[in-house]
Each structure stands twice: as C-alpha cells, then as structure tokens.
Image (cartoon, rainbow, N blue to C red; front, side, top):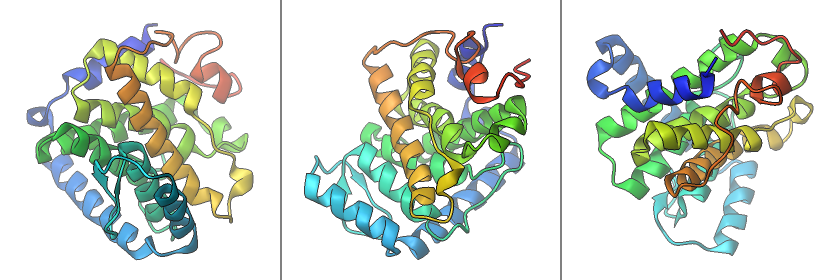
Amino acid sequence: MAITHNVAAWAANVHYEDLPAEVVRLAKNAILDTIGVTLAGVDEPAPRIARQVVEEDGARPVAGVIGHSLRTSPESAAFLNGVAGHALDYDDVNHAMTGHPSVVMLPAVLAAGELAGASGRDLLIGYVAGVEVMCKLGEAMGREHYAAGWHATSTMGTLGAAVAAGKALGLSAEQLVHALAIAVSEASGSRQNFGTMVKPFHAGHAARAGVHAARLAQRRFEGDVTALEAPLGYFALFSLGQARPE
C-alpha cells in the first residue's frame, strides 16, 4: 500500500473549491477560537520563557507572533504560537486522534503562509488539509498509540503540520511525500510531561517541526518515500503493531 504517496497526492490535489460550505464554516470558527486562546495564553510562563529564548537567538523577521510585536523566523513563530495556544489547554480537541489539532495546524500554516505570501484561501485549505491528515492518522493508529504514552498532539501533529505548511508553500505531491518522511523522524512527545510546561511545548514543537519539514522538502531535501507504511515506518514504530493503515 503506497500510503505515503496517497496521502501526499490527496493533499496536493485538494483545493478550496473542493471544500463543503460546512467545512469552511467550521474551519473558520476553529481558527478564530485558536487565535482567542492564543491571545489568552501569550503571557503565561511557558510561552514567555520560550519567547525570551527566541528573542535572544534573533532571526530574520518573517512571521508574526500572535499577541506580541515580535517577528521572527517561520519556524520560531510557529513554535511560539503553538506554545501560547496550548498554554491554557482550552484549545479544541478531536477524539479521532485524542489530541488538539488546531493549535498545531494554525501556527504552522500562518508561519508558512507569511513566508510564501499566501492568500486567506491558501491558509484555509492548508489548515483543513493538515487537520484532515492528522485526524485520519489518529483513526488508523488506534488507541494503542496514546495508551503507550505518546502525546498525539505532537506525534501526529508534526505530520499534519508538514502538510499544512506544505500546502501554504505550494509544494507538489512529490515534495509533500518528502515533507511527510522528514516529519516522521521529527515526531515526538511523551505524556509523562503532562502537567508541566512541556505539554504546551509539544504543540509548538509539532508546528515548528512541520514548517521545518516543509521548507526542507521545498528545496528537494529527500526522505524515504514509504515512511508511513514501511516495516520500520511511522505506523510500525508508533502503534505497537496495532495500526490499521488500510
């Protein structure tokens, strides 16, 4: 089963015009909700500390940080917006993957979109494509993934964010295959850190890693084209052999 190729081909070929009106409405509501919880969380300790580190490092001012005047690299903006958005843990939840999709997808697609000069419709389709991939992965992986201690917001969010950012950057199906492959090796996040600042870090990490994967793939950085379905691929590693990728 050429799952990695199939996912990338679907994502590359889905367009704004393909979205049902109800999906557009729900996506807009979710985006507004995520901006709201990000503004509420921007001065919590975890995002404040993360922002201090980013400011110390400095970067080309490409992308904005919600609720703050700082502009920084696409990866760092995605990271900071993800941390702030999850700092209060009021962001939306999807039970297909037992995690929080919007707080990863929106920071990733906003940052990549600013880099690419994307339109509002480009951002919306990137967001929807990323959420769809993230949640379908959750359905395929089953409950064993979460029960084993993985934080799906981060482990599945990284792959969804690679798709979301890739759409905003205009990646081809071939490039999205490699973005997914890179994201497979960036996926991480332990539930042992729940209750600490690392939980919101997971959302920011996934958004940042997804943008990073998409930008590398845009420049023809290559990974294994069967990274999802291969014997040592994503499903095998993260689901304890219980995934149903079909």
